[in-house]
Image 1 (cartoon, rainbow, N blue to C red):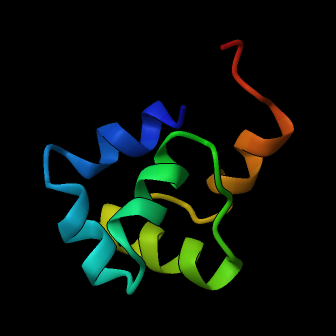
Image 2: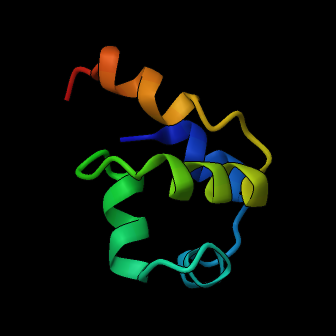
Image 3: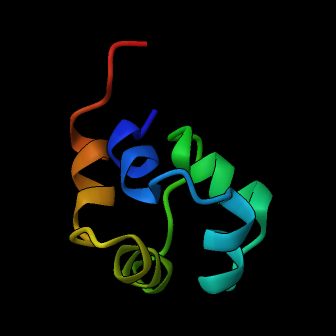
Length: 67
């Protein structure tokens, strides 16, 4: 689970973030749950929208959470 992404979303609906980044809400949800890793292009879009460093999406992959 990418808790930092949920916090960065700041209560905005997943659909809003997904629409602004040109992905489906289902894909965005999978990214939040760490079930999918976005492409670099999508990571950069998402990062710009929620105000985080796009590389953080890939740092999570190196340091998986303990479920």
